[in-house]
Amino acid sequence: MRLIKGRKAIQIMAKTGCAIFAVMFAVSLCLLCMKDIPVKADTQVTVSAVTRSAGVGPGDILIVDVVADSMPVITEFGPILFNYDSEKAEFVALDQGKELTNYAFSETKSNGVLTVSGIDQMVSVTTDENGEDVVSASFYSEDQVVLFTVTLRIFPNSNGEVNCWISDAGVFTSPDGSSYASIGSGVTLPIMNGGISSNATIASLKVRGTTITPEFNPNITEYTCSVERSVTEVNVNVIASNLWAAVIIDGNQYLNVGDNIVNVDVTAQDGINRMRYTIHVVRRESNVPDNASLVDLDGNTYTFLDAPEDAVIPAGFTQTMRYINGYSVPAYTRDGVTSVLLYLYDGTQSPGFYFYNSTAKTVIRFEPENTIIESSQIYKPVEIPSDVVVPDEFKPDLFDDGSLVLPGYSNRDGDFIVYLSDGSGNQGFYLYNKINGSVSAYRFADKKAELLYSYLFDVFLVIAIIEAVIITITVYIVRRMVSDRTSPRPKRV
Image 1: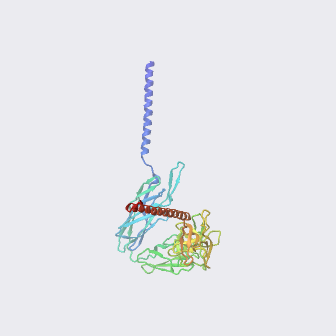
Image 2: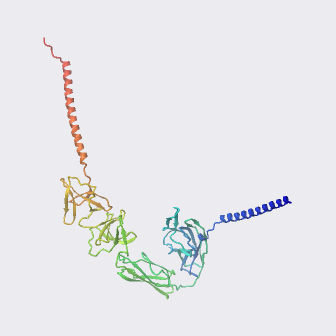
Image 3: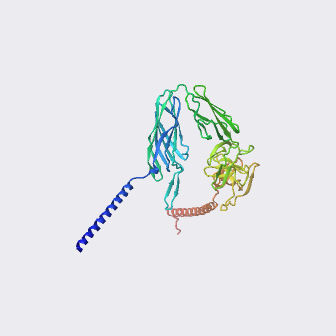
């Protein structure tokens, strides 16, 4: 009886173990299968073509937005292939999405196909606690984002319907790898032949070199923008909603300082409907953008200012506008001179002109009385460093011709040298020609080497003299011996 009970207990334990093993195997298999399925719902992007138009007519503008349903930390996307019926419409313009200002776009155009790609140029890279790089995109959105906008013009003889679609959504790349991109909806619109058009709206309004506010909308007719003081004319780009609408732009030339009104008058094809769009162009009183500044090589900050009207400009310099440190500012330039002349304020001295070398990032204050302007370089006296020694043959001297004052040194030969710094920050002694004002680098003669050469010359001269005497004596003796042998003297008896 005990043996039978023991066998039953063993059978029960075996069955229980098998059941437990089966459950564990099933769970492991499920987990393994789940592990093989890539779950990237948060990195899936759907690209679609959408429009707000319900229909278009011959000659009308059609605006199509290419959108992504989200932008989950995307650092690069594309190439996206946007297609349209090239026999029904022509390409007019392509504009980058307003939210993607940090992305650099590239596009190519062929018959009926636009290929567009974008890459984030403001990607930030940080280091986590493990020392590994963490890449972060500059833009993130869980909502729909306009990637780019395509403007098309319906041909005058088109009919039926026009189609726009995405044939390839490309690849949307996130910092941890590529994201899945799928193709969404496209656009199909009927082309309505309604006879003569009564549309007097415009589809696009831009002022080159500035941004209008508010954002353009065909139903908003009043805008504002500002330009620099140096701008006296603005280029207004307008695209009429209908091909046969007449557009007249007035007031965009001969701008005054302050508020200027530029009118864009649109007359529909029917000659009846008209619309006027007004742009208030404010020409600023200052040529300098707000808070414009630059930082030199030593970390000093200078603020850009407008030069006074009575400021004296060095001969040969003319005013222009230059982009410096990201700002369009007034600058004075001269052919051949690398540095530009700027009117700056350093926060301590009174505002004044400074020479700025964009390559070396050096800033040198312009002082007419001691600044030398050469054909390709500028020079200014600076204090001699403690480790630089002036040779004994040069004595302190001062050059003063009434307009230029240079502290320097002269020698008995009439050489006048000055310790100068050029526009790139290089320092050293320069030879200044008092007659024509030219400047050239000066190299001191090595007196020790000269003295050594003199000693060596004297030594070799003495040796040469001794050798000559020895040779002379030797020749004399040899000749005497030869003479004695050939003509011996008679012996006395």
